[in-house]
Image 1: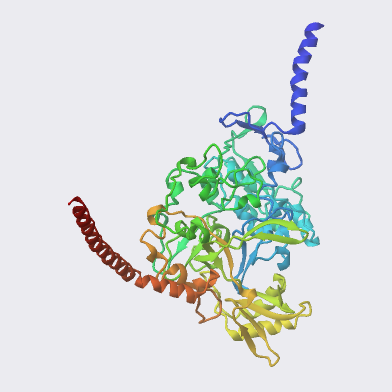
Image 2: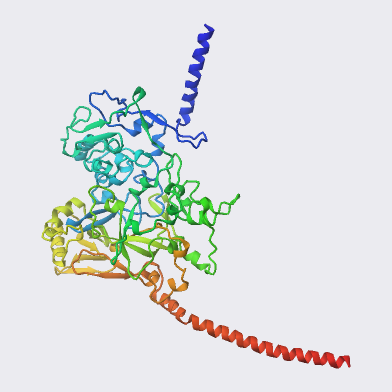
Length: 635
């Protein structure tokens, strides 16, 4: 009897302890201090919470939310920076790269973001629901966010029932297996293109294969009953008690980050291949992306910009910046030189440079040339996916480096008012010029829903041949006028129809003529700061002296920024100084002073030499008089 009691106690007490622990946190939520990576040998569960086994009659895709929930607080994770964009309670921080909707058939490229960043539109303003947003851009997200929102569009409710929701996909980042397929012909991006949202994580992992497409299934299709979309787990996937081994790592390999965060430089005279260029100096030194971009269970990843702590609760927001690593903060013990970062001296550089310029102004991006170059990014151009257009002319046209004043940090909400704490520092940016059809009501420009634009403008531009390169169609002013006339005749569109492109606003005046308003506020480019690739100190601006930035034709101030437009034959540029809130005349005069500075130095040194000679001459004469007086006193 006593033996039975002891046995029961030994079994029940650990269970009770685990239950109490689970009330506050789950087994995998808190580290016990070991740097070893736990073995993830776990059971798979589908989205209904049913366990998956190799002998199931109708094999289902696994749900990471259900499979990981035994050890991890998925709700906490799903509120991280990569997933919380639709949450209006999250401070937006410094503006980042927006999602860009591109449609060459309507001559449109529009910046979108769920975060209230300057120059962007909310997807709903363009008539894009969360389900449609996921279909367009879910290819290069780790799931979650808009992918888990319930559609409120009647026609989409049934489609979402068929496609499922795009859950947070832990494997997108934390799977160390080389077979993790994000962009292949049957990988993550392709599953999303087929509307296989609930199958995407399964189809991308190394031990499963998904065939079939939800996009071609009727609204009545039931994944629990039908086999049109088939899941095959490879032999040997399931082991003891039907558990599956995942190669999960805490510290995400940089290769996983690259799928969503790669860049390609495009120069007019040369297109450097990867093998012909150097990597970011930090990566070349052996660092990984996650050495600087860190987070805890809450996945509130540090983005690494100055002042981030005003918009982020991450305790490392201040120290994981350029200054935080290289110069340190006023803390004890000292924290300068993190991860072996050298401590720069900046000998001879006037302090005003550090008040007016971000570190990235001198150290990041390509070396500035007389004219800006173009580039492609993963999120804008689908780099790494099987359907990517490899042409250098493919839309959207992203232009950089543009040395512009930073727009500040979205730190808090006051009711509906967003507070942007100013920065004022100049940093290198990427930009693109929006092009969209809109209505004008009392000087307010509002984009027209994309569906209406396709039905009207598409008819006019259909006459223009669309280049296979994915570039703009050759849009004429006559076509713009015809398209605006069609939009004005649409009863569902309220207000005067206008077209915004190349920084200008086009509208039909009372006489029926097309009128252009240049430099219209609605046509301002959308900018976001760039930080990579970082160049070493020997390749930074200023290494040749002041002339790198302070000559009368220095690209930093007087470079030409391309103004992108779909209008045929139109080629415009903007002055770099126009993005820096400074007077070009003042900067020209200031730069012109450097022409005479060598002469001034010669004059100053000559004057100093002459003055020294005079002082020495009269000093010696005075000394002679002193000796003479002393000699007379002796006598």
